[in-house]
Image (cartoon, rainbow, N blue to C red; front, side):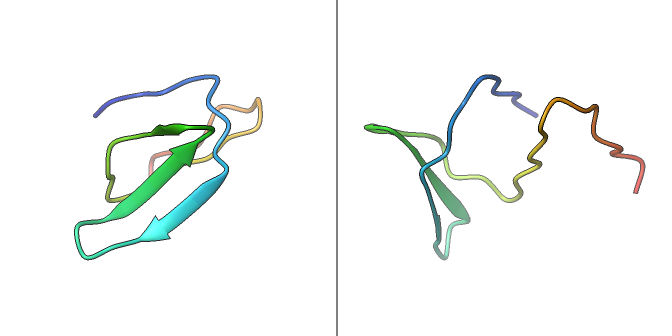
Length: 46
């Protein structure tokens, strides 16, 4: 698992490979799942 912090996502695109994320001009790695938080610790126990 790779954790990215302080990232502002401008665009999400579903592809056959997974979810493609755009942050400004940077394209982030394709992922299977996005867990978004807003300052609270996410509950990942489910």
